[in-house]
Every structure is written in C-alpha cells, then in structure tokens.
Image: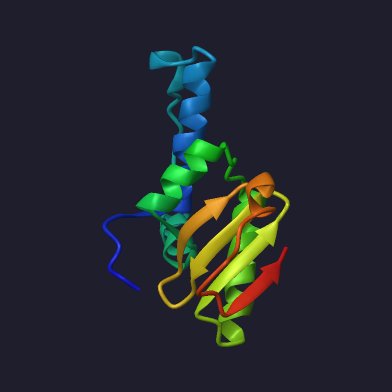
Length: 135
C-alpha cells in the first residue's frame, strides 16, 4: 500500500460532521462554543482511544463528506470491533459492510482507505480484498 498523505482520526471526522451540521443550521460563532471543565484523566483517555481507533485517509474523509455518512459513536465502535476481529484472523485488507455502507480498511495500518453508501455497493466490485466483515 502506498504511503498516505494525510490521516484523520475518527473523532476529528465526527467533529467536522457536527460542525458542518451546525453551520447549515445557522448555529455558529459564540453560540456554538461552550466552555466546559475537562479532567486530565478524561483527556488522556480520549487520546489513548484515538491511538487505538481506526484512522481515515484523506480520500476516505472526502468520501464520507460527499456521501453524507454520519460518523456516530456506535458506528465507530462497530468499525473498531470489526477491524479488531479481522486483525485476529490475520486479515490485511478488509471490506466492512454495515447499514451505513461499506468501509475498505487496511488492517495493518488501521486506516479506512475509502467508503461507499449502501446504494453505491450494488453495482461495484471489491478488488484487492482478502476478507469481509458484516456488522
């Protein structure tokens, strides 16, 4: 697999999606920002979770935006579990198929390479995939 230009973590992708929704709803500026106290342990745990969570290539981030796929906590949890199961079985490149669509993941690098919606999956052929996980 060629070297990725930019990797985005799933949490950042969720924030980008939420920000885009707030902007379309007209909620921007000071009203969109709230100050909360954050414990060091919470920040440390979030950073540890990010390190273990799947990352998204620049291409995958673009596809998520174009296709309007909402990156919820549940979806991210399911993706991470699917990648973990694939890793346990020795998979290298896996297609993970769920209700939100299909995600092509390079397991050794823990990177979502691309994604497609459910309607786009119908006429497509997946190549260079050694495993599939249904979630």
